[in-house]
Length: 296
Image (cartoon, rainbow, N blue to C red; front, top):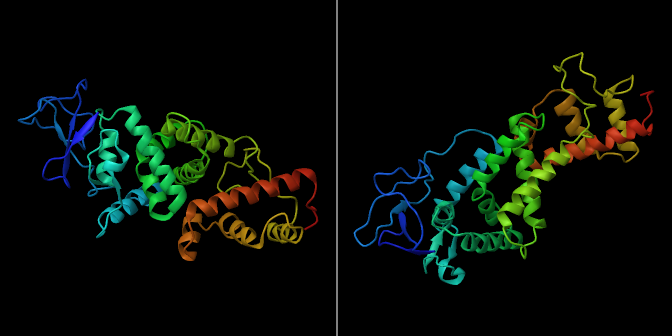
């Protein structure tokens, strides 16, 4: 697989492959975001860079990641990779990451190239965090959205919470995946999926259920007494931290949405969600083991 850049490289790149079966101008491309036109010098088409305009305007975690990536790429120095250094048939020039995403999604991009690019992206995300971590998320958004859809049929969770869980588990998988193994994207997907399912397993605590749940549903509840006093006792016994007691008290007992809580305090939603889940799991174990008194 090789890619030769036309003169207007910032807007499109031209893919060439000796054995790729690509659509002509009369055959629609695999997605609506790619436009195919025949060229004079080759039977293979050109395709446009993945657009960064007209993106989702929702407030879900994955939509926010998409918008943040678009803003990053519209800056004066958009994040890029050196195609000449990466090799594997990539254009021998600087490639902005939104263009790189289009290359990776194109059927002419072979698995070897895709794997090498992802190893580079994961390494950059681990080393530099920040913008590179966002880029690793953005280039995986098609996969992450498929995971959310598939996991929505296996776990019981609000869409926003499930997206945040998938995003948090994926970011953890970026640090855990072994780059020496083949198919890093597939392994990232599996690590993320298994982590989400594990976190939503049968041991997931339900002791702080939302008040509008079905009253006939059998769920673990607090012992008789005041829930806020129980949280205070849990802090005193170092079962949970004071910060998590506040989060649970406000978001579970006072019904303040976690997204609102995070916005008011300028906190990362997925990180607070993970900490709350761990705190609730600790409370669950303490209640089941009798470590918390029911005389609160």
